[in-house]
Amino acid sequence: MSAIGNSRQVLAADVTNTNTFTMPYPTGVVQADLLGTTGGRLTVNNNDAYPQAPSGAGTVAFSFGASNITVTNNTGVTLSAGATIHASFGRTDQAGRYESGVMVTPAPQTLTAATGTGSTTINDVTGSFSQTVLNNNFKSLADQVNAITALLKKAGVAAS
Image 1 (spheres, rainbow, N blue to C red):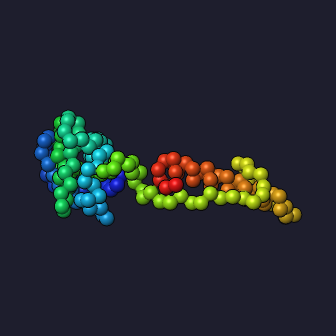
Image 2: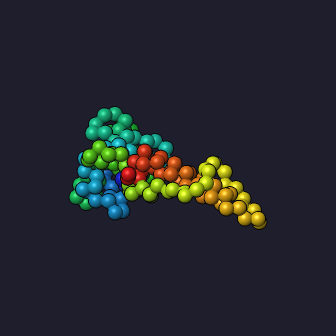
């Protein structure tokens, strides 16, 4: 799941509809990281998934306390004791920015090959070395790295 953080636990007791249980914060995540977030999800036994919403049938609500997260079961069903609960918290942060589950990092610099003609093929330089083939290979690699970098920027994973 894509999220700011994920937490997993096994329920110790049944949690009937409209009742609550608590979960620990994911490792490295604190209350301030999740306050005001949306887009979370709760999955039961790697099967049934329920979206985060303040209320409404078929959903779960998250309340981010100082030391743990309170989950309100609005799913319409009882979550059974022994069920494995996987919660994904905060796909969208307080500023409305989508979080892909990885930290947004600076993008690599655009690569420039001094000479050569790029293609989608890396050619064998062969035993009789060819500077042209080698330059074309470098240009092809630089073009592909630049294309990947542009996609990462577009997806919001790499900052411009």
